[in-house]
View 1 (spheres, rainbow, N blue to C red):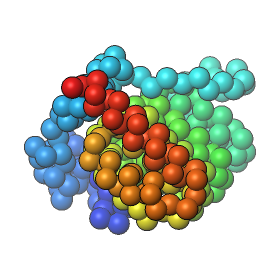
View 2: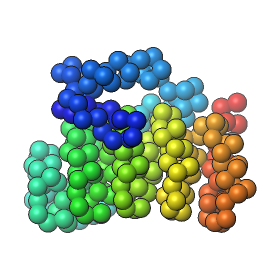
View 3: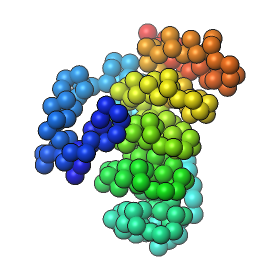
Length: 237
């Protein structure tokens, strides 16, 4: 298995993972250090508990009439269709089935397809599926695609998925993209995601964007995110 960590350029580390971990020798010690492996912040843990459990399942109201032959197939076969089928619509439906199953064994193939599939809407569905699995292991693929996918809709799906995860360790990654992103809709979804995370450290940034941005949709997104963050902190207090 390839290392599950990202490089400083937000690409997947090309090294092989150690047998006992998902990380190579270079990243294994980093990913198990107290600063990385620690529990979520007190606010993050509180907000997560409000959702039910620390990593509560993310609600999914998406519906699609998937053919019975695919819907009833074992997960291994669904993954094979995702990776090898010549019809992009079948690959999309396979990603949708994996999204509904929330199968952790699908993380690797979904990540691979998110990076390599030549069809935009297949990659977009892979990002959604990864987010619905809902564990910290999906952060790396979503961050990589948020930074590098050429299609705005895929980057939007990644930002939404990261916000839905509600994991505090995604905040800095979303901020980094927000400050570099030029597409107004990706920026909007990054701001919404920051509001969902509820981390007060972004208030200064959002306040500045609200004052400086020309686009009304960005100013309104900042206003709403700031309101959500402050409401959550009042609830904690």
